[in-house]
Amino acid sequence: MGTVTPSGTPQPTAAIVGCGDISSLHAEALTALQIPVVGVCDVSPDRAQALAQRLGTRAYTSAQDLLAQACPSVVHVCTPHAEHVPVALEALDGGAHLLLEKPVAESVPQAQRLVEAADAAQRRGVRSGVVYQNRYNPPNRRLYELISSGALGAVHGARAAVSWHRTPEYYAARPWRGIWSQAGGGVLMNQAIHTLDLLLWLLGPATSVTGHAATHLLGEAIEVEDTAEMLLTHAGGVRSVLHATNAYPLNAPVTLEVHAELGSAVMAGDLTVQWNDGRSESVSAQGAGTGRSYWGDSHRLLIEDFYARLGDPDPFWIGIEDGAATVAAIAQVYDASPDLRGRGTISG
Image 1 (cartoon, helix red, strand yellow):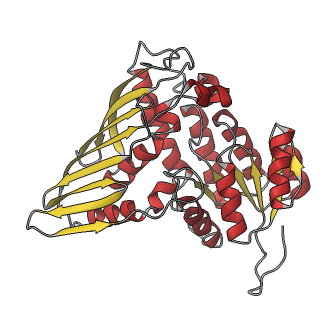
Image 2: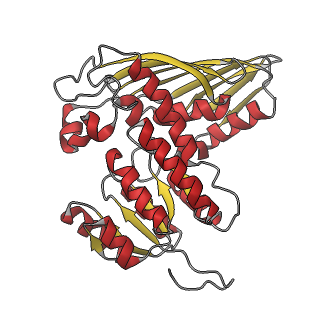
Image 3: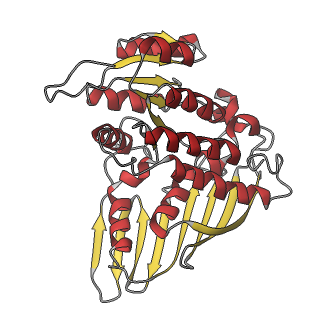
């Protein structure tokens, strides 16, 4: 499981399962944190070997072989969505801590299965975390502080928009992204899920969800939706709305607005807060990292925090149940969209 640190605790070791696009951010973070990577895995030998050479470690094409032979203490799951739960269950069953990319599962039953496994593993001292890295962005953290402390007063409502651009070529490069059985959904499940998580984090759990999803532009390239809208009622009665599309001509900044008793806050990259008494505040977004601009440095911050908390008795603060909540909310929108191909796919 690794060498011993000067403090006498074992040095954690990592493995990455899934060597696609997002794995590069995990690799960069682990390198920066000087966490030894004892193996990487992908069904594509070429992808696995490329990342292994970059990290100076061994490549595997079987997650089972990696777990049995490399014995990592932490497993980073970066696979296509349909493979998240099988790999995560194997890691937890073997006693490895789990850091899982979104979504936690491609269906509600699978998400619940993983919640139960993570709860059982937590009782054995095995930690689980979900990569909702946008919670680490300074504007989002400040907005959470303002709401949770009562500085903005009672929240009247919130609205958010994700207007991004995806092409048929984007889906052709990774065909699983546009297939119900592999992705579990489209723009809601793959892109806007982060913004949905922010709404649930900022305003509380959803007590009811409705909405509609459709494929307006990319129907010849994908099975899943490219556009959706949803209305959420949160605990306490606050309502929020979310609109998401992959049919915009470009990748516009994600926007999130909160209107409250004592002022309003607008997040569009940076955060701008305007109080009713004339005061104002701005919080700049962190600089972009080496990946896509909307990823920034928050992956590294989350991964660093996860490793720092491995010895804590309490669960990691972004747990599998948080991931399951977003999957459940998205399922309700799909169920309310009878004209969407694959209706009900993630509910049953």
